[in-house]
Amino acid sequence: MDRSSRQPDDAFAGNARDEPSPRAARRLWGWSAGLVLAVPGASVLVAGSGTGPRPAVALALVLAQACALRWQLRAPVAVLAGTAAAGLGVWALLPAVSLTGALLAAQVALCVLSATRPRRASVCALAAMCLPGAVAFRAGGPAGLAVYLLTVVLAWTAGQWRGAQRARARAETRRAVVEERARIAREVHDVVAHTLSVLVVQAGAADDVFTRQPEQARQALRAIEISARSALGELRLLLRAFGPEADGSGTPERWEAGPSLARLDELAGAVRATGLTVHVHREGVTDGLPAALDLAAYRIIQEALTNTLRHAAGADVVRVRVAVEGEWVRVTVADDGRASQSPSAAGAGRGLVGMRERARLVGGRLRAGPLPGGGFEVTAELPLEEVS
Image 1 (cartoon, rainbow, N blue to C red):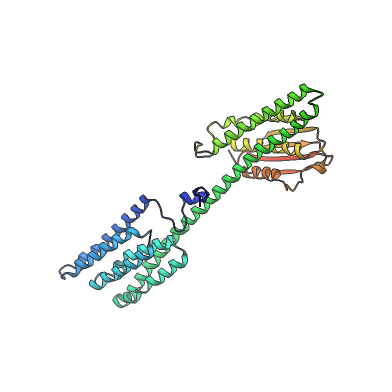
Image 2: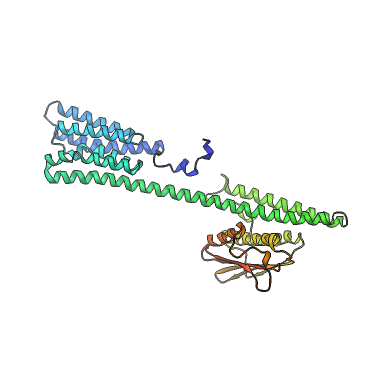
């Protein structure tokens, strides 16, 4: 399978069986090996003083446990089995060392296994680790059994908690990737759909008057060139915005050069070149709006004009109104085409769905539907406070 076809989150978030970076693995090994050497190792030195060669063998087993933890991420089941056997050997050589301390390395391996392997495997490992409880009961009575089982269950629970954290991180990464893909798809759709709609109308107009009115045909061709160049510029800006050179927010460094209500007259001019009359009316100060809201308002207007070109049969006039009223920005686009030919208010097409999604993402709402006297109207209400 091609590397590029992997899910993006797999590359840096991992899955249930992925290992962390080598640096993180070394840090985990250093921490866990140090803990094993400090607790069981010290216990062996204290409990085995003056008892012959047994302390040396027990200490060698402790060192072997610490070394085995080097592979706890790659093969936690094998490490768990090995460290458990070595721990039981330490306890058999020096019963003065508590069974809980002698099996500390196995408990660390159980925690890692619980965090990185499926739940069924971790439950089986937990059950296996509970079996030495009979030894703990014989050596320390009910108190010894309780302490041992408590430490084992805590180790398993800590692994489950860590595994849940990793699962949430992966889910969040997947969600972010899906949202980013949807955002790119909306941007590309808005740019391409609007431009192609304008180009189709202009090309048809140029063809109609090419012989009788060549100058008007040239004007239509020039409008086609201008619209195409504008679309190419927006697509280049879009690719830069989502490329590796973009900043962490996913927005380009010079966002002001991109789609904005400041370019609303330019957008209206491109639609006027198709023969449609476009009236633009502004109320309030539209400069300095939050970038997300500014882009959403521009794209909603662009898509509404595109829908007029595509679906509003017989439309001659489109009225665009942008009003900043208190904590709201209200955008209205209304045409005078035949309502029966306009998109349904339910928003079956991708255009209306995209407009509603843009409004929702900035905390706003959008209504679209035919007007009683004929025509179609799109109204979006976008709150300033949600994106300020």
